[in-house]
Length: 494
Image (cartoon, rainbow, N blue to C red; front, side):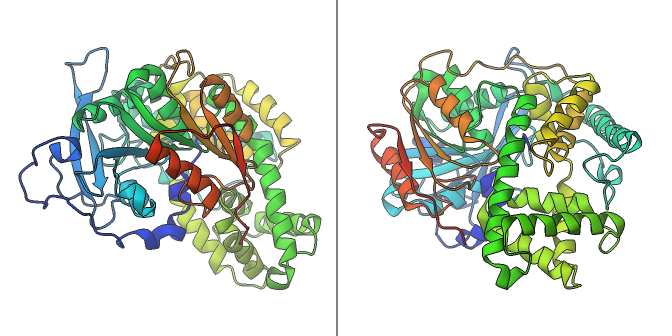
């Protein structure tokens, strides 16, 4: 999972109640003329595109940006933006929910609705679908559903033939992406997305960009700060990507972190053996889980949920302990003869097996090995310490070994002095391990790092951690960082 899926998306079910509860004060009517003045009101805000992930009451606008910034007057592509809050607020907070490749226009209202009242009174929130994503000019890989069958083969190949079959799928995905989006792929990069954000800042008539980025959004924000330090305002980077390694290398940082987090989940389930009956110790829960995996290999539930689908469920549950009860209940129910919860998870996670925009960013942002022998060697070694996740992670990114677009030259984060940045991180985050946050802290001189206990991916506003929320909100209100690096206690597990 080197793509570090959005913590806001991962928590969608848990925070859905936040949608629709707060009115958008001061927004012009959908059919009104563009408002005069500065800030978001200077854009024409209207209804959001049909089928988008924007909740009711969100207003959207579009902005044209160059496909290729080396040719600013050449082909233009579309960005779709969303806004929540009072358009006449003195500040605008631009938000990216992570990914890469996650739609953002549903994020503005979610974030604004979650801000403390004293912060939301001073900020409206703008988010956007980045280039290549959703309601902006999108990358398409055509119909990939026929390439991904369920039950899928086990992630850890049991034979050379199984490994070759998965390699073939990865190559076909890359070929379909090239056939459907060849003209876009070379330009779907983090650097270009950061330059798009500066066009957004200009369209908003803001002298500086105030920004909140989660997960991959931390890489995007740090890239913006490196390219445009004089235009960088208050910036929070939450669940921080390691700026010193390639995306290929980052998956091998994630593997042991995911395995460690799974151990915490198994220990949590053991304490609740009276509810889930999976075992009274972490070791016994782990053994139960492995036995279920083997049984599903031999006899897939409902003809479509095998060990790979169970592994997908486990991996998706590692991002926040809010999902632990769902994962434990699914396996508990299955062991009692009821596979409906497991099958429901399979049906929900299955369609997202290929994310065109995510691949487009990951595969072009920096270099990937083209020799599969390198992948095989590195993943086999990683599986010694992370048997549940190493091959899953590698297969997720495997199309990058066959990608048909040239690799970009990534911006060296920290190569220039940037304004003070606030970094928020949890100690056991499996998607963006804490060591990456420490390296970002070193790269961005003058930044402050606040580390919370626990391992939930995405801290500010969405983990219920009052200590972390206090740090983030104080910084947005005052622009002042904590005097020193700090720690916060973990949010209690459910």
